[in-house]
Image (cartoon, rainbow, N blue to C red; front, side, top):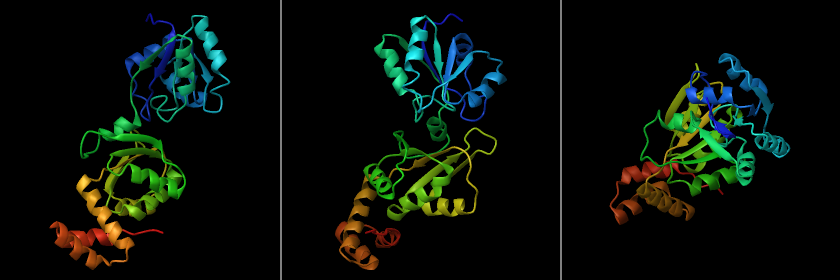
Length: 273
């Protein structure tokens, strides 16, 4: 395979090692070095396909320190493949600093597409509309999580979460958005793959009784504009001290909406101080 000298950004499997493209294998074999997050993880893939290319570690703690080394390789007309531990580099993985430096020096950056947890999750679930927004990992603080969700309430919002934080994150979101539906994808493409969809309370209850392991991608389903407007009115009336029953009567009379539906939604909404 005759490839031009360049930095190749190569997508690798997120779990099932068979989910790699023929082109990715060709590139990994033909380049001079492979820059990877953890040589131990990438070695498993390389050994499976009998690829002997040299591995050099490149992770978020060594991004700046490795720049000169990699740029010198390119200056010597030697190509580099950039991979992450799983999925597509630069998607919540290291690589941005290297790509920026390589482009600045005038070298090519060539993407070698493949699997991503974001697209894998989206392909397996039904949702409202084709649009979505990916934000990487949510912030850790409760206030910051709530602010992020509030800004994106009308989006199909995709985020990554760690197993030890997932349950608490869902509980935080559920405090203000109990009516929302969420899909949790765990161990995608692997033997114990699991994709669960339901209201936040249902998913919280499920994971209270299940041990969480592996990589996790979530889709918080969008709320329609009409539902957002109704919810906003409910929250306003609740903040003024109105009871659920009174809120249902007021809104049903003013806006010709179903009183029982408003009452149910009002019960679900908790105003936090």
